[in-house]
Image (cartoon, rainbow, N blue to C red; front, side, top):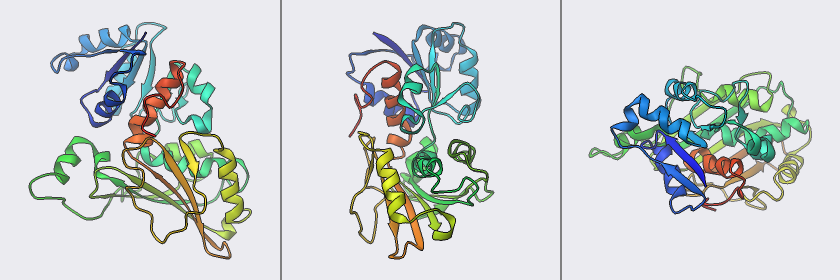
Amino acid sequence: MTKIFIDGAAGTTGIQIRERLDRRSEFDLITLSDEARKDDGARAEAINAADIVILCLPDDAARQSVQMIANERTRVIDASTAHRVADGWVFGLPEIFGHEAVAQARFVSNPGCYSTGFIALVAPLVKAGLIPADAPLTCNAASGYSGGGKAMIAEYEGADGAPSAYRTYALTLGHKHVPEMQARCGLAHRPLFSPAVVPVYSGMIVDVPLHRDMISGDAQSLRAALADHYAGSPIISMADGYEPATLPIELLQDKDTMRLFVFADQASAQIRLVAALDNLGKGASGAAVQNLNLMAGLPETTGLRL
């Protein structure tokens, strides 16, 4: 039985991972009391007793946890930003970087929620030569407020109600997901990223607008390339024939899957690549459990919400 320790189990991502692991007979979950989880000695003991550690911590604390490993056996899935572009870490988006690479890795960095949608849309098209690596890309995205963790959840669910209907942020253009979005798609330039929070608990829309003169081919070729890349995936799918006027952010709420769309005008002069997912599902905890399954030699969808 594989021993698992969630370091940071009291946070939103950790709680969601724990829920997906409940009643899973393949795993023996190491737990700490509220007092012990704040004790470095107790954490180090749990980390080194585990076969796989899942880090649901701020970046500095995640780096500290990795440094606590005193053996050659313990493997890590890091849900923080700390190692997403670090050498020696496999980026945990197996649909792009390989299921076997994740399965065999000792150190796996869980992707960010926004970057999961962006990379899933863009990376296959850059690889196929349909989007040039030097294209000046932009990305507009909106997330449920649970992506901001306990503090933002309390703010939106407080007695005074949601503080805003739409809150854009990262106005200094330094969002923490941008480095992985650029690096993992092989882009020459940082994408111009415009994220926002809306008053729903969870859900996410990631939108990459394109002009025809930015790409090779047309909307149909983009759609076909994405459909071919994700053919057979039980988690990421390409929408077929979905052409309504609106796309709700709650489309995949409480799911660990992701659906991709290509919208265009008739001449394919203007195109929008869109990913719908749950920021807590494929954008965080669901992705961590998918990676955990692969590292433990199990079917990747075991315990996921499909």
